[in-house]
Image 1 (tube, rainbow, N blue to C red):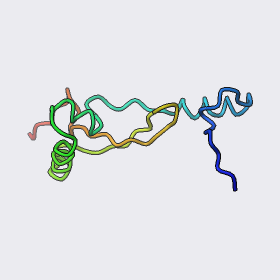
Image 2 (image 1 turned 120 degrees about the vertical axis):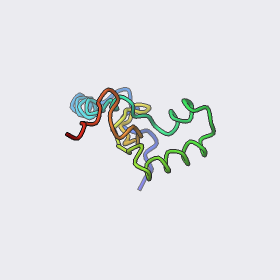
Image 3 (image 1 turned 90 degrees about the vertical axis):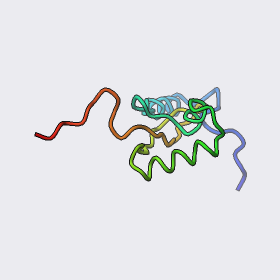
Length: 99
């Protein structure tokens, strides 16, 4: 079988029906919840190396400080599932106090 050199999302002249299908798929992209960042974003925020940031994130997830969620993000014209990490309790919300 011949290897396809150009992916469908990169072609400039698509069939009108295929063009509508690709646009509909791209509409399903999600915006991450506030406070949820990728490991690369946490690396920049913390001003450390990628390996150190990943170690901190893994430990924070194990400890329950951060949670991991996957969001469909549009990257280079293609929809990808990307892991994001954020606080267990969303910013702005407080834990209910026990009575």
